[in-house]
Structure formats: C-alpha cells, structure tokens
Length: 82
Image 1 (tube, rainbow, N blue to C red):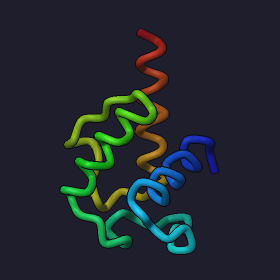
Image 2: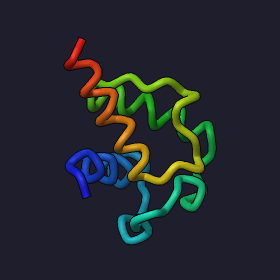
Image 3: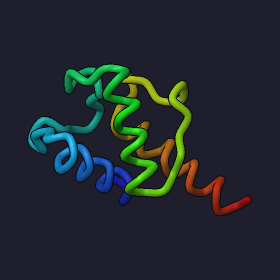
Image 4: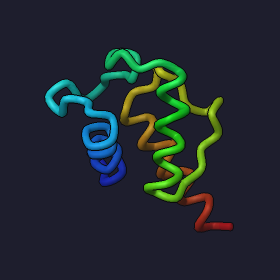
C-alpha cells in the first residue's frame, strides 16, 4: 500500500477510533459503518492534518480506503503542479 494509505489508516485509528484490525484491503467506509456525515468530518481532518482540500462530492462512503488515499494523493500532486 502507499504512504498516503498508511497515513489515512493512521488517521482513522487515532482520530476516529477505528479498530486497525477491521481495516483490510478493499473495505469501504460504509463497511466500517461510516456515513456521509463521517466523510465530511474525515475530509476536514484530512485538510487540517495533511493540508489537502477535497470536495465533499468527490468522496463517498462507498469508496474504499485505497480510493480515498488515491484522491488525496491526486489532490496533492495537482496542488504542487499549480
């Protein structure tokens, strides 16, 4: 997995008290009983902790953690390019 995936997992464990043992490849936020309100909160934490802003309509509870990590990495690359 990528460094961003690892950072995102660490945020889920430390900030949202998700059991690390529940986080497996391919698992969605929905699988972890996280809804759209959680996604908004997660995006705010990502903005604060990682410094990347992601639009609310870009991420969904049906996304995998890997997909969310890709979105964050993509936004970071776009921010550096501009």
